[in-house]
Length: 295
Length: 342
Image (cartoon, rainbow over all chains, first blue to last red; front, side, top):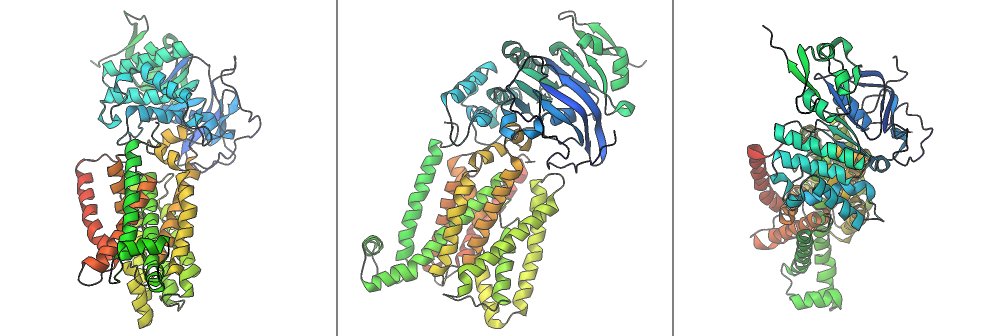
């Protein structure tokens, strides 16, 4: 737990990222986890949010992090996305330390949709989605037919084909979120991180987004790691749930496994301070969380 | 195709380029000289008699050239700072770069004993160098004071306003302490004026623009991506820290060298990029078009100042009269409806 030299939390180079094994990995080697955290600790302003965490995310799975507000699920996702520097430990992407690689190199393997992306003014949906191609382009290799194909494909996969020429600022909330998912898909990275992709959407549009996510996982084998608040939706769309603790359990993982193993009354009590029953969903057979009402 | 050269942006850039060419000729014509358009074009491209050559090349062209180069530098610098902070209010003027460069330059005029006069050696290299140092130091101070594990554009602007106020105080103090002739020279220079410039003022701005504009243009794609937020741009592989450093250095050098040549010409760095963005309907101010509009505004403002009005008015006052109402309009409009930018 005690860390040698806690790096000042800003974005400077990670103090202790080892430079060994910084080979350029070709994505999706069998058996190599898509993402791995090794003794990972992260803190803001002196206090630790995550402590000495070890975690592997298998390629081709959908993993959802759940937990109470402030439990550090978004923090963990940001550490995976290299948006936060760990105070100790490291993150490995397809077996290689993420810190030893160039931004572009990582971006070809890992796509990130943060919580509040800024929608630019006067930008067509197609042009917004095209920005997802940046890691594949360079001065010498500008726009190619492969880029155009990736953008068309991403627009089609998210049902945004008909809206491609609309101004992104004029889209509804659900359409806009699909446009952002399309940008992430256009990046064609084998691993995708989504930070609360359904927040601010009504149930229909939440389902719409999560069905797209499940489809890309099944059809393209994309590894998905996301943060969700709705436990029932998390159970319905995930292969694996990770429950981060709060209060006295803060900074660690309280439960980890398939939805039925994880969503138990005990875990809900520990992680969310919630009295609830868990019953099978009559349609999907997945766990359905029913909170109790105090009498 | 992916937004590098949209047709509308191309059209706006071409048209503003043509406007700048026209203003170049009008700028040489304007004033009492008895030259015709034909005379000017003939002298410029083929060669006129000695009298015409003197008027065109020694009297008028340096003034017009400094106006164009200063305007272009300020336009590009404003487009850079407004884009990287995602805030139209974040211009070199408001962030303190202009006043830092001005304080440096006034210190040089007053303390260094150099006179602000045509042909003065100070104007060649010394003044631009001191202005760049003043601008860079101010930029570092403002950026450092605004840093709280990241830079928020509103904090940057507030700190910039505070630092600008302090620097204006320093500048005023220097002028009060100076001898009368030097104080008058500094005061005249501080208004932002193109009167009395000669070829010696042209070269530093020309060199700075020739070096910094291509460097700024390498950041075009990164500027487009940072409009989506810092997290998205890191996710797409932008080296955000390096990108910011390049953008800030370009903006500071362009502003400071421009200020050293003409004095601070207010509102150009604010106005030109916003006009360019609205004309071209782009997500952020386009660099080239902003530079061309800046060139047109300064040259046009100088022509208006010295011909249309009954007495000669410095260009800095003309741009302030045009720019200030636009700033107020933009501020009230932002208050009423625009989203906040992180």
